[in-house]
Every structure is written in C-alpha cells, then in structure tokens.
Image 1: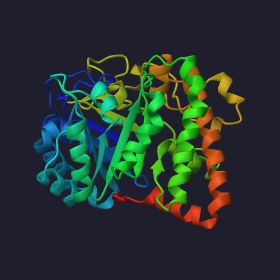
Image 2: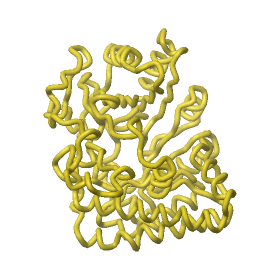
Image 3: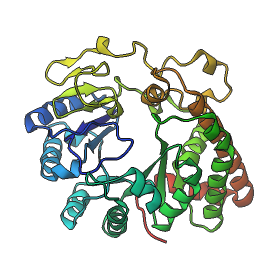
Image 4: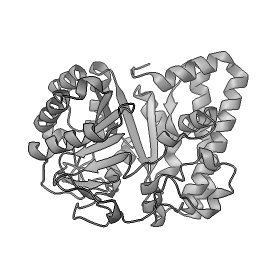
Length: 372
C-alpha cells in the first residue's frame, strides 16, 4: 500500500510543470496522527507500507517530518509491519543533519533533477526566477557521499524530449545509477514527438547496453521497468495503479486523494475522496470506474496490453482527461518502450548471457548508489 503525506504545500521553487498549487499550509500533528492510524488500520498485514513525505517541498518542514517519523515508529503496529519511508525533494535543501536523520531512520532519498543546466535552469527555477542546477548538483554530490540510497527522477517535456539521451548521460556522469524518467503528462504532446520515439528510445537503449558491456550497469526506468514486466509475463495486480484503493495521498487539511498528482489546490475538487476526520467517500471519485480494472476498449485487443501502463489513472487523466483512457502519445510511448526493452534484453542476453542476468538482478535490488 502506498501513502503520500503532503506535509506542506509551500515550496521554494516554481517548477514549470508542478501539479501542486503553492499555499502556505503545513500538516498539524493532530492530522498526521489520524493519518498514521488510518495507514496501519487499513493496510493488510501481508502488504508492505510505503510512506512518502511530499510537498510542496517537505524539507522546508524538516522538524515536522522528524515528528511524524517519530509518530510512525512509535505506533503500536509499527514493529509488526514492513514499513518503508521515502522523502521526495527538489534537491535544493540538504545538510549533514538531514543526512544523519535519513540514515538513522532508513529513509530513502529521491530528488528531482531534469538533466543538464540548460534544462534544469529552464524548467526548475526558484521563486525569484533563478535556476537551481548548481544547488541540485551540489546536493547530488554530497548525498552520494553520505547517504546509502539516492534516487533521481527526471521529468521530460516536449521541448526537452529530444535531449533525453543527454539527460541520461548527464545524470550517469554524476554517479547516479538509478535513473527514473517520467514525461510531463499534462504537456501538449504531438505527433512530432511520437515520431521521434523510436530514435530517442533507441539511443537510450544503446547507452544502456554500453553501460552493461563496460560492466557499469545502470537502472534506467524506461528500460528496466519493461524488462521486469517482460520477465514476469506482464504487470501483476499489485503492481498496477490502485488509486483510491491501494494508494492514497493526504494534504495538510486532512483531505484524501487517490494520488498525489490530483491534489492541485486542495480545494475539495472532484478528485477528493474524503477527509481523514470523516473517512473515505468512494462515491465522490471523479470517475466512477477503477482505472486498474477498466481500460480503453481499443487496448483490450492489443498484444502488449499486459506490459503497458494503460492502467495508470492519473497519467491517463492528465494526458486524456479520463482516468481510463490512454492518450495517443502515451500509447505510442508505451508501445515503443516495450519493444525497445525487449530488443535491449535480447541483445544483452546474447552478448553477456548469465552475466547480464546477474547484473540485472543487482541493478534492480541495489539500494546503494555510488560513483564510478
């Protein structure tokens, strides 16, 4: 089960594609305690509990994050549960105190960096208009030295899509070995970008293969998530989107959303499914179908549907306006990614044999991110 705690809607940045409206709000400990009780009460005993600290910028409220962590770890059900904590940050706030706390409490560190300065300083800027690349690069370098786990999430946009291989190369040059690539689903993707997909994904495939051949494997989500799905003969039910059933996001006001991407201004919009004080009201779901169970009729006959993210409700919503409809670009992207991953897998299996499988397992399970 995945739970996202938006502990503040305040942020020191004004990223171009942020889906959280900036407000000077913070979560109270009273609300946080109710959320933690909800988490432990509603998670089946056999399922892992993933709790993410989110914002805004959560490290603006580092003291609050520490207090909520204490609430979690002191909860009567904590010792008998498998709990994983993560903080998702813009990477501009970091200190030895933060690092020590993250290490002490085994909290994963995921930061956003969209690539080289010419991209980062265009799309991820401070509230005063200044670029953030220097600050984020410094955080990456320091975090790699002092943390056991560092993940990076790079968002790409129609204006930066052609540079995606450069983004991968740049992040890898910083010593990051777990690279997550995600499109800005709300952007105006067109046929022009769709036609570039085979070329761009093909370049990333060649980079991926080269890393393995040089015995420096990297986890690149675009390739690795699809290879994992291929090896498992498709996504399993628990891997699919469970927004509003197995995935919840909580705001400072206590409102509950099926996914953090749907919070917006937290004005009780059509996506809000309840409040932590009153409970969940599923009939308030903006769309009455669960996206993981009902998809496009066009998708049903597709031979690749079991390997596709057609079930991701919020991605569908931002790209098509519906939880259960896949946009033309997302369809083309998924189809190209699946085929690219399959070809990449075949090439490395042929070149490296069992060595590839050993390194693949290591890349998928490693928590440690180190430099070259």
